[in-house]
Image: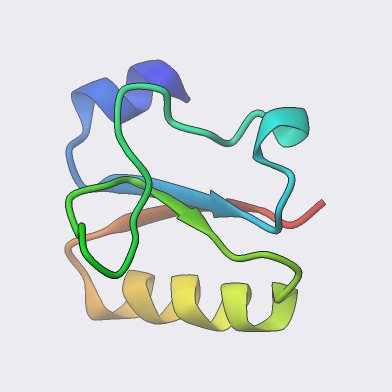
Length: 71
């Protein structure tokens, strides 16, 4: 996943509050937050249903290749 994130710029990912244990954190990029939109890591907390909806919406809209691992 780290290699994919380096070679494919629109690749981003997120996790339901378990990034370290599910190894879904992209090390070469910061996290997204309300003041910085250049990150590639999204922290969803325990909102798995919302996480699925957000990433499906990003994939349908285009321009982004989302990665998610809910558990």
